[in-house]
Length: 54
Image 1 (cartoon, rainbow, N blue to C red):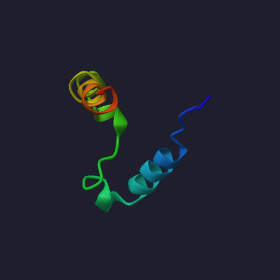
Image 2 (tube, one colour; image 1 turned 180 degrees about the vertical axis):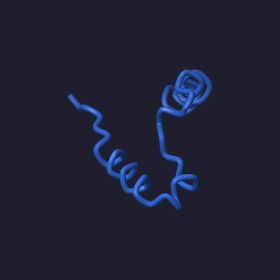
Image 3 (tube, rainbow, N blue to C red; image 1 turned 120 degrees about the vertical axis):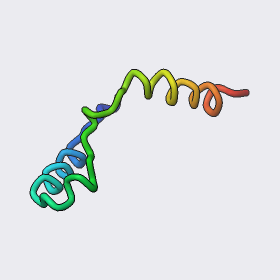
Image 4 (cartoon, helix red, strand yellow; image 1 turned 45 degrees about the vertical axis):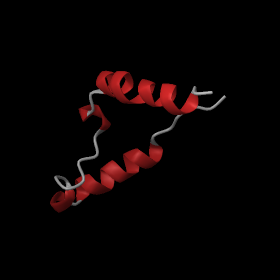
């Protein structure tokens, strides 16, 4: 079983926060994403089109 870890992403966000000049340029906050929209309109159609086609 695989468990998703975000340790590297969190390290990247911490480094970006330390350098105020890059905060706006590299807005890397997954909390800002509309995950429901992504799953419904991007992820599921991609699975159907590429992973589930025969």
